[in-house]
Length: 241
Image (tube, rainbow, N blue to C red; front, side, top):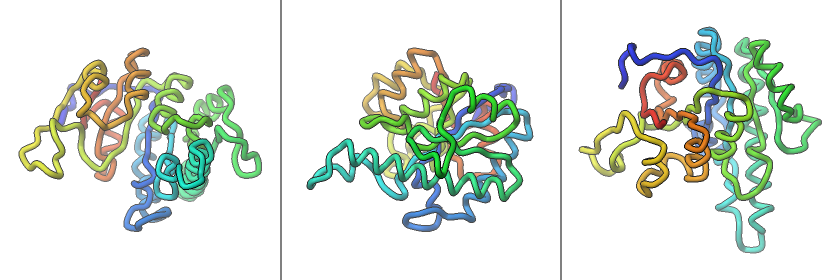
């Protein structure tokens, strides 16, 4: 882990959460207790003066790539995955608000009855007012993962850092679950992350887009206290830039 001397101050960051993380102690769906814990951790970031955008996945309900086949077209399957992200975003918005964190849910798919449409100026206004912005629907188009959507959204909203939340504390030279002697990599170039097929922390389209625009990414364990705050200040995990 990087020491405090490497700490940076970011005005605006994007946190990418997977649906699987939100299921917490359950096999699927949302663990509201974990959601409240997550809200408290994100509040630390907001209170430090950093604006927070969240892109949430939907794997705890449905994965488009897994649903495709046996009569379900890939486009339809991806649309189902986008709807899964909507359920997560709506639930998190309510949980955050109940924890006194002003939050708005914006959607990249048409769902005006339940969420505000994602509009660049609207999202910016919410962020400038100190609200957390949770974006549902991925990028709104099929064949693109929420990882790629997260990097695209971060660029659109002038985020200075993408924080990819995982259950491990960074990138390793091999799978730490299988190899006890696996070594953690503290820093990795975006070029190396794109070119090395063994690096699977984000899909290559997302990494390639980040590399093209020199947008740094931190891979970190979001399930430990203060780790989200540390990542938002450039500490801990693995930095890819």
